[in-house]
Length: 112
Length: 120
Image 1: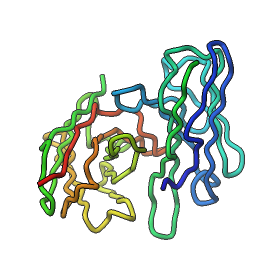
Image 2 (image 1 turned 90 degrees about the vertical axis):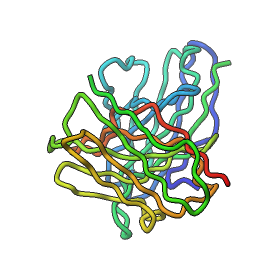
Image 3 (image 1 turned 30 degrees about the horizontal axis):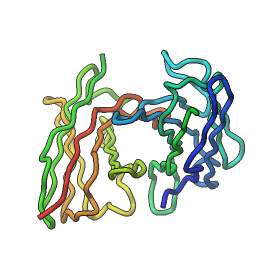
Image 4 (image 1 turned 180 degrees about the vertical axis):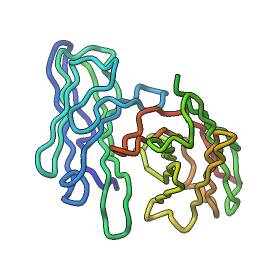
């Protein structure tokens, strides 16, 4: 069971806007920044959003991130078929047992 | 151009020790702003962070796997090594190494991953 909670699935039609949520706690999202990764089928994860809302070079501005309190969201506007992938949120966790990186369980995005 | 490549056995037996090597290029393991993480993904399941190491030899391990993991680096060879003891079939997964930025703890570049199967 993952420390960060994501919906297992999401879907949308081409051109639509889709959001994926990520819920955590005060020791992770509440006190650290959130990253988002995109994993296309059969490939390694790719950094999509870092520091809550920053896009690495080459990531289209259709992808955006936000954070509020102990939750974060990834929004994809102008949905395209190539966006069909698994999406993971991640954050540093300052737990009493020692610092860890924690991931969400992943959200499978289907473009209908 | 930053690249990372994992190497190691594709099959290990239960109770054996797994040794994986991550060979990096395009950045130096002596770079104070960078480190390397290991992350795994069982088939059809989510990502799980395992460990990371920075240039100053700062290390951190997954709380749940700490007793079984050891991470080390050879800067001259541009390699980071992860060992995991007492392997079990539940450890069957694709193992990734990824560069980690020190200032924001972000894994910005990932290797292609290597599938390790644990079976007798």
